[in-house]
Image 1: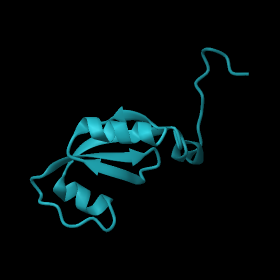
Image 2: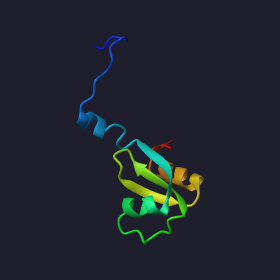
Image 3: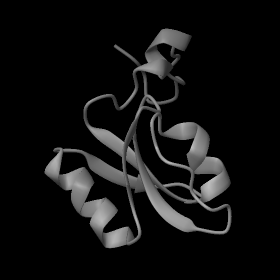
Length: 85
């Protein structure tokens, strides 16, 4: 049992799988960033801003032109969306 003052420790493997299957992160990105993140995606103009949703392990899930649609995509996949900047 861990005491209240004890700091929990995680292995690299534990951290790599933290939130897997339950959490997705949402991020607004430019076309230049998206081109390398989503395999098979047609070239996107660098000045285009879109919302990207990724699984906790970094796997791309979807992109959208509207934040609320990306959030809805997380809920449709039974994931809790979190925003990163």
